Each structure stands twice: as structure tokens, then as C-alpha cells.
Image (tube, rainbow, N blue to C red):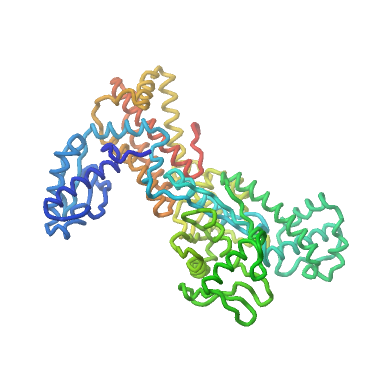
Length: 591
């Protein structure tokens, strides 16, 4: 659990500044807490260790010039809670307060990181903001292999789950299996046609069916289990579209389960687990039917009817989504009596609410952008009418580059680069790291040539190499008789002693500042749903460590300096490993 009253923690230091500012404002007759301010690192070292715009954002309500408030804040804080942390302060520009921190603050901050160990930054989210969260991602129709676009959604969704849980949320990872509707029907018909072809019958795959070669492999597996049991029924039909419903159901169900097993294996290889695999087909089972539909679907229809939100027109049943911001009302039950995908989705989200989730996040592909307004409208229509509980995130595409050329993909044509292909080509670590390297709402170009390059130009190699270098430094230290320094750092980590009272050099200060930002990076990644912020931070931390390593020898004649620098190495190692793990990437000890 984080301690926000510890001034050696950046959050604690910010809280102490807020308290001092509240005192300044109270003396000026301003009631209430200060307006939210930013505490950041100046772009230039000579401007201090930290800077805040607190005076600027509170000057108007105080009726005083910002520089006057900044001066009063600096004096009050440095004489009070910041007495042991503040070497001096400066008022800069229109009213920024620049803080120059003592060596003692830096030593205390590093000691705090060592005590926290691999849990530094864990639970950074205040208890009152933690929720029971459902994050649903990937959720592709089980009709064929997962391709690199799905790899991006999987990597993003899994990293988001890891970061949410690390910050303090109670997270459930969910895969929604779209195993009902027209696409699954075409998949079943396509698999039946391939089955017949493998057994010598002339049955064509439907023009709008699935043409991929992977269906031949599935057909062979089906034959190994069922033999020629269904050949006569398939071959007797005029075409695959005319197959009896019971025959198609066999192929559809078998094919669904076979593809889901492939999904589980592929996602496992990508280090993406799921807690729940929710089936669309299950939404139609159980309970008393309503308007001809059982299960969650019937319950959703009953809820909406009770709100007077359904009406019949031209034989179909419509939902009044225009009441909730949609551009037109939407059909839930077609005139044929079939349910639409939209009705299934409404029932599915009703089920999530019944399961007690306080917040629900769906991560959808780029082609679902137009579906967002109607889904938000439907969720608002559902009792208890709390649209803020549903958050819809739209991911963008991946352009896979090899030799400067982009590969185009189509699951139906079978012209795809699968997740398994990607992992085989560049490895899991490179795939996971590079796929979260940019915001999910921007198109990502994944360069296969760069991904396998062992140089500082390859982002994952650069970060992993920093971790491996630290491990090598610590191993070498022990081999050369430096166990004493490591043992003293272990005592600091156990809280048995503090770090030696040594001067802290500029490269050491810079590295400590970067390390101390980690909890805030985790919080920002949660707030903005942005794993790429952890990705960017890890690159900055690796760069900071490499500079420190070049400028500061870890083992020197002064044993106290060596202990301090070993502590810096240990803290850097652990935070690099933690950050990589949040992105689903390993932290190798040798490279």
C-alpha cells in the first residue's frame, strides 16, 4: 500500500505542498481546498528537481499575483513540511515554483523504493477509487486464426488488465465468444463443404463463406473424429447453403470449439490469459421465455418493455434508442423472428451488470466505430440507467512491415498473417512490447526487421538490455568479493538501516527522479487507459540508467558510495522488471 504522507514519495511530497498552499490561501481569505496543480520535472536541470504551477492555477481566486503566491508557498513549505527536503527554491517565469531537493531527500526516496522492492507503485490508486472492473477484449468470432490486428488488441487489453490490477482495481478479463448469428452459420457451412471436399465430394464453399486454407486442416481433424458419418448428408444437398440445419449445427459447434482451442493456445503463447469465456449462445438459455426468447435475452427485452422502450413496426421489434442520443431507432427482433446482434449485445451487458461489475470496458476493433453511439444508447436505456458504467475503447489497425512493404489481410480469403506467425518471426517479447508502443487510437506500424535487430534502435532490446546489464553488474560485483555492499543494500531493503550519508551526483539524482515517477506513470496509464505510457517510461528509465552507468562507477574505493550505487542498480532493476511485466514482457538476466 502506498503511503501518501511520506515526503520521500512524490505523491507525499505533492500532498505536503498542497497542505502548505492551503495554509497560504487561508491566510488570504480563500476558503476550500486549492485547485489541482501539476508537479513535474523541469526540462532543464538548472531549473531544479521539481516544479509546480500551483501558484498559477490558484492566483485568480486568491486575488494575488502568481509570483507572490509562489514565493509565499516556497517559504511556508521549506520552513515546514519540506524543511528536510528543500535545499532551496526559486520563483520562475510568471509564477512557477522550482524546488531544489536535498541529498537527504534523494537518499530517502531511494531507500523507500528499496523497501518497497518489486511492489513499488503497487496499490497506487486510492482505496476510494478502486472498483470491480470487467475488461472485455479480443472477442473475435471463432471462425479462423487470430491475426496481427487481434494481437494488438490482445496485447493492449492484457497490459491494461495488468496495470489496472497493479494499481488496485479488482479486474476480470473476459472474452466474448460470438458463436451465434450469420457469420457462424457461414462458418459451419464452409467447414462442411471442406469436409466433403476432403472426402472426394464436389461441394463448393459459399461465395460469402470462409475460403482460408486453415479450414482444410480443421476438416481433416473433423474427419479423424467423425469419419464419413456426415458425408452423405452434405453431398446430397444442392449446395452448402442448403444443408439441413441439424447438420450445419454439428459442423458449427465442432468448428467453434476447435477454433477456441486454437485461440487459447495462441493467446497463451502471447501470455494473454482470460478469467471468463462468455458465449453469446448461452444468453438464449434458461428461465421463462419473454417475447419468444429465454435467458438473458428475454430478461433484457422484459426490462426494456417495462420502460416502454420497445415498439413494433413492419413486423419487427424496435428499441427507442433515439431517446438516448442515437441517430435512429434500432431493430432488436427482425420480422423473421430472429434476434439481431444488437439484442445479444444488450443482453450480454445486462448480464455483466447482474454479475456486479461497477465498471465495464469493451475494447473493440476499428470497424466498430459506428456501433458506439447505439451501444451507449442501449446501455443508457437499460435499468439502472448508468451510462458511465460502460466504457467503449476503439483500437486501430496494425500495418505489418517487412522490407518496407505492408502485408494486407483478410480472414475470409485466408490471406492473413496470424498471431502465431508473428510470434514465430519476432518472439513474444518483441511482439508484446512493440504492439503497445503507441496509443491504441492511432494506427501502428510494426517493423519486423527492427523487431529482431539487437541494437539500441530496437526499443524492447534497449530496455531488456538495461535490465540484463544491471544483473551482470551485480553478478560481477559478487564474483569480485563485493558481497558486503549487496548485503548492506539488503539490510536497507529490509528496513534495518538507511543508506549511507553520501553526496548525490547529478546523474544519480536524475536516475532517482525517473525511478520516483513510476507510481505516477502507473496512475496515468490507468487514468488514460494508456499502456504506452509505461512503454515510454521504460525507454526513459533505460536511457537514464545507461547514462548513470557510463558516468558513475558502481564499485569505487569509497565503500559507502558503492553501497549507494548498488542500491540504485537494485531499484532500477526491480522497476524495469515490474514495468516490463505490466506489459507482458520478460526481464532477462542475460542477453
